[in-house]
Image (cartoon, rainbow, N blue to C red; front, top):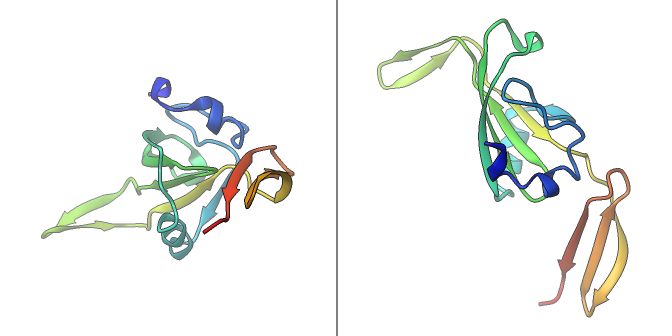
Length: 134
């Protein structure tokens, strides 16, 4: 699993990657609307699956999908207790939604050319290059 994930890039905005049974850090729990808003503005580079064992989220292992994008990750933890009713699933509780990584504070750092600029996060040092030309 880890061999396929670009740890050098992700390691710049994640302080603790965790393992198969833990969540990456830092993370925040999102409201479903916020998760789906971010998902619509997100292109994942890698996707991984973990079974999270964390008693803060209940007594059972939870299947969690994590998608890594440009400067953060998004995750959805499915509830452990569910059942099939007709042609759909019913959950006892709602899935839990996450955003992983630094809550970036980008500041302009370098002009790389006409309308081409580099921005750096003041918190973690992650950089992004933006071409704002037409």
